[in-house]
Image 1: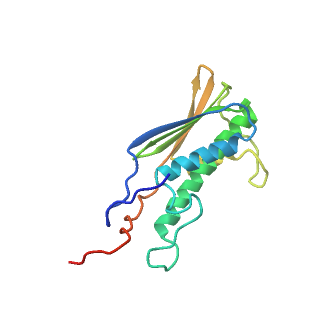
Image 2: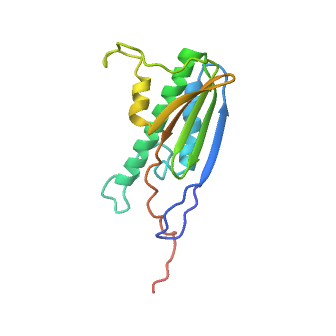
Length: 182
């Protein structure tokens, strides 16, 4: 999707509210599909720095290195992708795979929901040391998400989490071509 630039000095606006749904079945390739779906939404919502989606921070306008705002936006987007990976992986490992990924975006937050067919609530694994692989997904959720929880559904459960949006983009670049001075 091509981004349209506004007039010079005007901050790029994000859509006020939008919900995107991805219906899922099975476990094969589902984490990558969910990450790709989420990355596309983040790019559309201008959570990623300008340029290639997820390619890294763009240089600052004066060419002196990375723009701190772009670095922050990229860091938040990478956190979101990690959180999606964790919740979807948990559904694959403990519930036979997710049935749906929902991204609900507002100006105040991004709510991510992953539904699966198991009524069992998410539970931390007891006695796992920090150096042991596996069992750390809920710790990651607790550290990176503003809030998270779960609710029972008729078909199983939905695990949800919320993330605060990154700072808005820098002012749009002036249009190319001759400019009137005045």
